Amino acid sequence: MRDMNAITEGEWRYNQLIKLFPSEAEPAFEDTTQQEAVWGRKWGCNNDVGRLRMVMMHRPGDEVNIVDTSKRMENNAFGDVEAGWYWRGDTGPDLAAMQAQHDNYVATLRGEGVEVVYLDSIAPGRMKSCFTRDSVIAVKGGAIVTRMGPKIRRGEERPVTQTLARMGCPILRTISGTGVAEGGSFAWLNPTTAVIGISSRTTEGGADQIEEVLRTQGVELLRIQLTGYRLHIDGVFVMLAPDLAIANIALLPYWFLEKLGELGIHVIEVGYDDDVSIINCLAIAPGRVVMPEGVSEKTRKALVGAGVDIIPVKYDKMISGGGGLHCSTGPLIRDDV
Image (cartoon, rainbow, N blue to C red):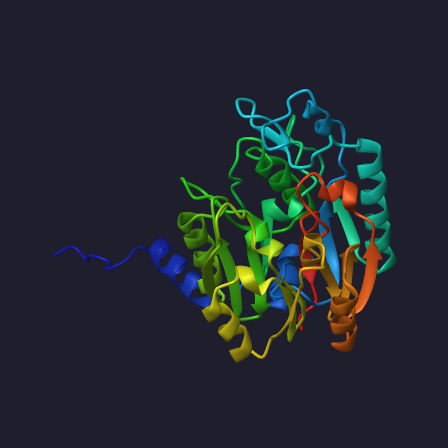
């Protein structure tokens, strides 16, 4: 009777090798040692207030010229429904002034030690590309590329993806299917809790996909329903320090205000004499905040009393385009807090 080998010598050798050189699930992808070894540096954010190290921005350019001031709408703004563009201000854009204000903002951030990375390019005619907050959400270990809602913004995703890839920033997810999500509706409350505002610009389907990434990192995602046609949560709520936020409490649900209290987050409430744009500010370190003009004396005293250093930046020409200081930045790296 002929001998029958149970396994070939080649198969035996292969299995012995794989047994000696197994896959290693630990440490996790977002672990600092893994990030530095594989991706060159520790990418991402797990908060909105730690020292800001890197931010993605775009200087407004000729794409803004798509705005045709002969096309004034009944609401006194400008727009072309068929083409998809709109301009929220009641006067047209002043590109030179917008660029000057944006340049000053960039200089302010760089003066604070922030690395400002410009988009490599933008999609043709995407006149809101300067509001980079909406196209990218930084999480632990990398970034989520969002899927923009309206016609005039759809297409911003590709240049953002190309810029992230060039830098070697891990892209952990792109929003797909019919999901819609924009970064202005996402906020970190602490390293294990985030919140997203559901609106026409961030749907439940988009939030589900963001939540899938966060769940693997042990992060809870809270959801609040924004009112009416309000677009983003950063128009009503922004974190300033680990235990401090600024908000319009009239536009936030009661349960969320209670949750903030449970998390030990004190809320500075804006008043009727504050400009609406001041909430759309940016913490560049705990309690060190870049804020536009329009802060009332009462709110200023409350901020200073809470230990906030305010860095004022004139930004009205940019704001007239529909976004503020917070909107104009896509943080990619922050220190832990």
